[in-house]
Length: 79
Image (tube, rainbow, N blue to C red; front, top):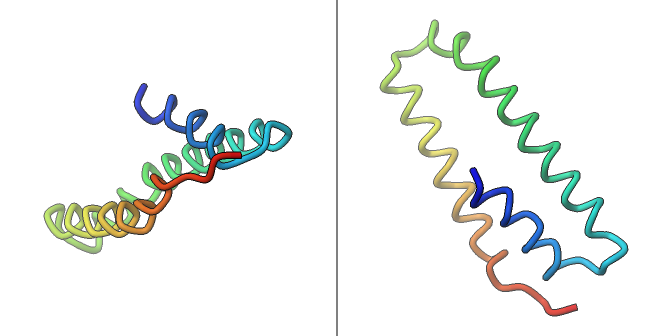
């Protein structure tokens, strides 16, 4: 978790001008909390309809796709 919390501010400092950095970090923080809430709310419901192994596979695929989509964010413009 410290890696993620530090990454948000570092990434926003590379990608956004100073006037937009607080907004960018707040949106990422909100997205993190909403995603955690959705995961906590949906897991019991999804577990009723599929096995735990299959549920873990779906979450793993979602994490892999997210990682592939956001790899280009490592290349950052200097503002």
